[in-house]
Length: 101
Length: 375
Picture 1 (cartoon, rainbow over the protein chains, first blue to last red):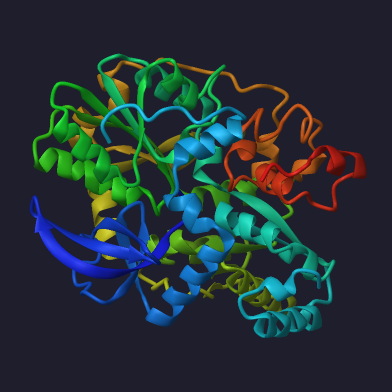
Picture 2: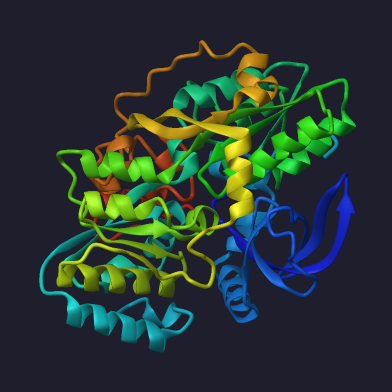
């Protein structure tokens, strides 16, 4: 959760009066809120933390960071299945997903 | 230089290291504030590449680690209620409260869900108007603005069944508390880059001046950390103590003004307890009066829960840089990632977990054998 991951803006739209984007994090695509970087444009990169773009980043830095994160398995840590991770840490089998996420 | 080939740019890493080795004439103790930096340092063996005279002390910058036990117990109490959908970031699932964790609450039938963003929790509230949706709002200045925006949205959109259990913490008062301790050995700080990308650097000059300590804003990639160490050591050797930005590609002096404005609107500064450390004055945020209706502590009447931390866990000393993880009696025996006593072992960004996972060679041999990596 500490991790802030660079991502590239693919698409921008207004939703419930809020500026939202779809952002590509080296293959994983997530919804991201742009309210804190309202002038961010499609094609630009930003540091994204828990679904919010917090600061612009140049393309070269963003690419290097993404490559490094992928290499270190940090993208899996950030976007992988947390229940599986928790179950592994607890030394038990993963539990069935409950609810309608 | 065992690990240097794994660096993204080994040539640059070598140049930075050579420069650091050439600069250092006396012993220096630096604290990296961010748990992500600690993780990166241990994972890449950066502390072992540095001159012996440069010691890295691990700071309290892991939000999962510093969330107080009683807040975890409040979360467990709320998450156990049948009318509640409890939403959290994944790293809180196995943080031990008194006797159990969120992972177990879910096993017992609690509706605990993991979200990527606090806005996901708000959407769950919109989709489930007959349930109470509670989001576990922890974290430092990087996480607080997203959570602030979510509460703001809940109020703006009139979503009555959403609330937040808030336990946010602030870095500058923690630096002040560490420097004010009589046993403090820290002579320079690697400040947390992403915290500064939100807050800017305005809070640091006063601290650098008062404690005569250099503060260098640092990212958490291996090369960023080497550059942060290089600049801090250069200042120390010259007898300087200024605020410097070694992470300019992501940090502007003013931070993110929109995020800071939202923080000030939604939250107010308050005294906050840190797990293992105790109360640090003015070190946290709580919801401002106009947002109190969204405070899960009030809504579910759990303000009264008070919890004593286990005496055998020494994570507080680890968090303050007074003890290295492997110096704790319980490390690797009574306390492992599978049976964590404290959150510094359960969070992957905690110093204890980092030492355990990467089987540090500077721990006693018998302990090193017991501490077999689980990854």
